Image (cartoon, rainbow, N blue to C red; front, top):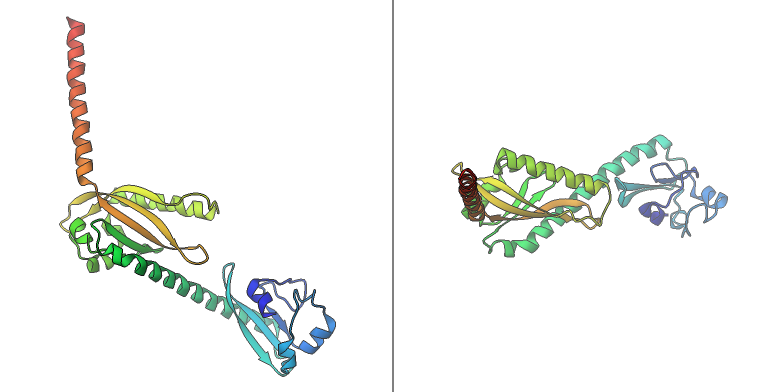
Amino acid sequence: MCGNIACGRTDPKFPFFTECGSFWTNSTTELLASTSEEDRQARTRNRCNSEGYESVALVPLRSGDEISGLLQLNDSRRDSFTIEMIKFLEGIGTTIGIAVARKRAGDALKESESKYRLLADNVNDVIFVLDMNLNYTYVSPSIKILRGYESAEVLKQPSIETLTPSSWDLAMRTLSEIIELEKSEHKDINLSRTLQVEMVRKDGTAVWTEVKFSFIRDENQRMVGILGITRDISERKRAEEELKQSEERYRSIFDNAQEGIYRS
């Protein structure tokens, strides 16, 4: 029965299962005598009854659709539970389940950070990690060259302050689009992105960067963080602007020459 609850194998049409996926009985003896293994969803070993427990409750530790464990209460006396008590315990189970899920997500994020830290500390590009609240949890030391800040300073900085307003708007629109795609459950869609954004330096100037980012996922494939690589592309943008200006200048010369030919 523990396996039933942990795996979500319950059927609320039976009185010993609840809509929230819990099992309870005030008499294991009567339950075993009046139901079949088919009714109970699986072969049961009847350990609780053999140990003398009559009142038994098994409540899932639930966070959304995920069940991370169960809360078990046993009493040798009969009639120890009411449906109101079971509902109260289900609320506790949900609270614990959410806490467990958050702990696992935090552990997954820390594990991902440790994997990339040695590499990130020794590259020229800036490698960073954000949690899903867009708080920095890691920034490589090369941020000093790019923005003039030490890593420790950036970790305390709200991420909204790292970009110019227009670049922040672009980043938020892109992130919103990705979250919507994730909700649509099209798992075959590549959710990694590359953006060109202006970052704000410590002296107040802005520098053009190219940011490539993807998502860190836990063992249940839920997004728990963002892993990104930032590269200074200010020279590239300067070259592109000079090329654009040269093209416009030569186009103007050509247009003027053409106009002179037509007049002559």
